Image 1 (cartoon, helix red, strand yellow):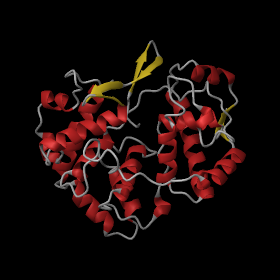
Image 2: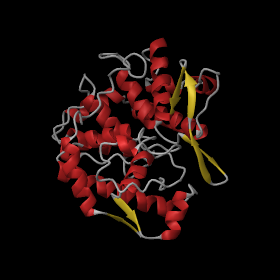
Image 3: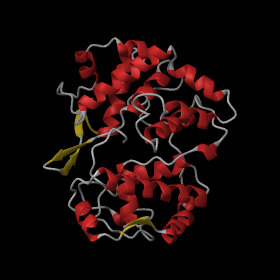
Length: 318
């Protein structure tokens, strides 16, 4: 019903390394001081730990169908889900470098937490706000109860033989990260900490990396033909953007995971580089408008099955 296309993976593995500037993002680039903390900011590590745990659910559901992505105005600019979250994090850091220390988060009142995610209209636009609030408190309480901090956890990882493996294993215990067996948010955090200018996480075991599978990547895998469907009923549900059950979502996501594992191995590119390519390429292959196939770097090998959509399923995993 759901399978990976080995030949298509080979085509992508041959093409992607030839693309210019295919490298990991440093989360400290052109929008420095707006979306991301500047280099050596004292609150950056705590902020990224908090931020990655909340990278999920940026879309709206109505009558069991996907309706639209979350886009709202913040700082005078219309920002989509992840960018809005980074903006809110950076805005809080500007007012207080210690804002995201776990003990500070644990002491926040519900109204203060709600204001953290306000847009320009003083509204909290997050579609899964109750889940965000629960994760925030559970995350903060875990660090307080364990008498540890994000910087101590990273320091421990850096003193092991396999820092990335230790780090990913440690995150399996932390609320906001522990829920996802495929560790999407955990690997995203690892990529951020490794590629920041400070090199917070000093990875010497890149073989421990795992694919970062979110809904953008699942949509890309299906449309490009890296993952294929043989069940017409399932195809119809995806095209209609109708909700699927947990088992179906899991099957599509795991197939995408396996496809990305093979793509990393065959291309020689890092998980971070491949993830950044597909994440940025989502602007050419978006949710609500026709894909700009002519300007896409993989246009020549893409199956261009553009009616397909990611599995519509509510989760805090991504």
